[in-house]
Image 1 (tube, rainbow, N blue to C red):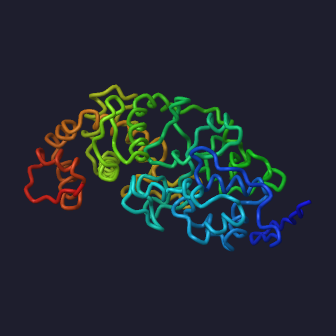
Image 2 (image 1 turned 180 degrees about the horizontal axis):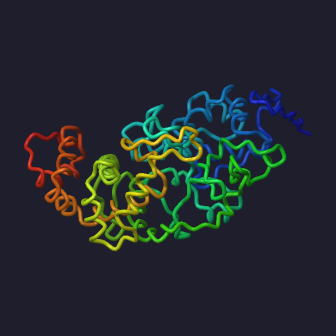
Length: 384
């Protein structure tokens, strides 16, 4: 009979050295992100995530740093010794697996381009974002868990349930961050603890409120699917013809520039108005600006109530803010490059915006679209 563990519910929890493996070790699920798997392991063993961190690596680094980023050698060794999963399986759940797909390199600290920054206060905005999720997906799961794809900035909806993702508790409005949940000793052992709000104890699977912006889902499903495919396959693919167009790295580098342009406070209102007016998007310019500007205000999980008017990275925006911007991006790319050329020809301020970027390593597919309208001679194209 295996020895029973005596749990110490202080932060620095310890286990008998003669029992290296934790008693409950659920397997990683499809598309599960690393922090979700670790949270499920901790809760099902009657621990908090920070207690599991102390047990595995002797400190709180698994929750103090971005564990989903690049697992350290120390952490990988601890996983093999105490959780019984191979290193390759752990790396599959982390973003380092896609280092050559969406980024040239994933740094140990700071934002990961195209990945939502969760649980950390933005230096520029003061905002703290939560994990995005689909309540319907979590409710249908035999055991609720969080998908890696939900962390991408360009994934804002669940096409299966035709609704926008959420990143806050429907009951209290706080950003939802499952690895901050403590719960009580009895509830920690349950499989659904990961779906319990860390602030008010509400089960986020029971969220009944449907966003008024769910009607935007049909307008972003195609561009969202294309970008997910690009991140996985390393090439931008036309799903109608299955022809490839751009390598993923310059493709995503250009996408980030367009995201910044569309959501920047310096972008002229008439630019956004023109894009919306020529389409059947289910929102107007005023609604768009209201949502975008609200992203600059720190939400409930941030005690500073600080408001910043410019400079927020796209990785710090809310689901709704990213969804509306993604819809505008879809319109631009649908008639690219004519769409951006029409905007620049009629708007001098937008030309000045892009002139400042053309002296850097701008992706060539953006460069060649801008040149006919801006008419500059000294440019530094991106080497694809």
